[in-house]
Image 1 (cartoon, rainbow, N blue to C red):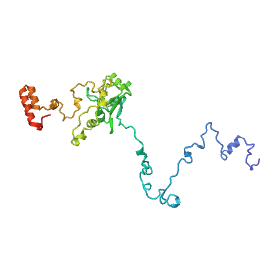
Image 2 (image 1 turned 60 degrees about the vertical axis):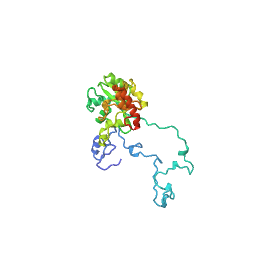
Image 3 (image 1 turned 90 degrees about the vertical axis):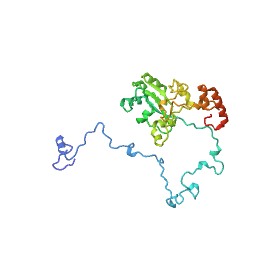
Image 4 (image 1 turned 60 degrees about the horizontal axis):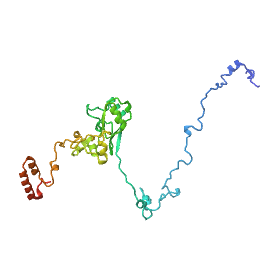
Length: 313
């Protein structure tokens, strides 16, 4: 082994000589048991690419005849196909009767009633957190209560709320709720906790008048009266099992008198509906008071007067 004069030979060098050479020749550190990778490999995020042909390059039209899609941009000369917008090719069949007109139509589309679902666990959390102002002891929580507290938002086409039974097993607060639809688990959970539920129907106009009465006042319109359910929903709201509000209704009762607008006089009744045909109200009142002969004369006068009398039914 050749070495310079005065320098120790590496083959015969001891530990002291190696320490003297440590400043000139750095020693490699000992290998780690779990050394970090020095390169990321083929699955690195910076190497993710789409497969070849997955993304087609967009064709640029109208960039000169040398591009292959210049001048007319591949649309041809004039006509409807060269214009922008909907071409309407599905409505055309080359001059013959189009398929839209030729194929017969079957069935119909029935507009479904939609309801906004409200769970019992949400009602209880709103009450306990103070977000929902609980009404008086006898007043129930209605759709207007939730709407005024900004807990729900009813878009157009929604017929009200539906009370659902999620979280009914942990219900501890007695709730008195009025909803448009009720699920069977929700009824059982609320009544088991000491509350009550009622299913109440609102027409779209009545629901709007209930939630936003200021809209009618601003336009100078009278607030609508509550309407009865349509015939297909009438039996549903008359069943006691579904807690319908018409279950205990009797002939002559006023439906929900507290929801009628102020301009409606519930005590006034139209006497003309009880009059027989062809009789005047004055004759009918006279007969009721005991004036039978006067009633007969009045009847003759009514016949001579003809049909111009305003009080003849």
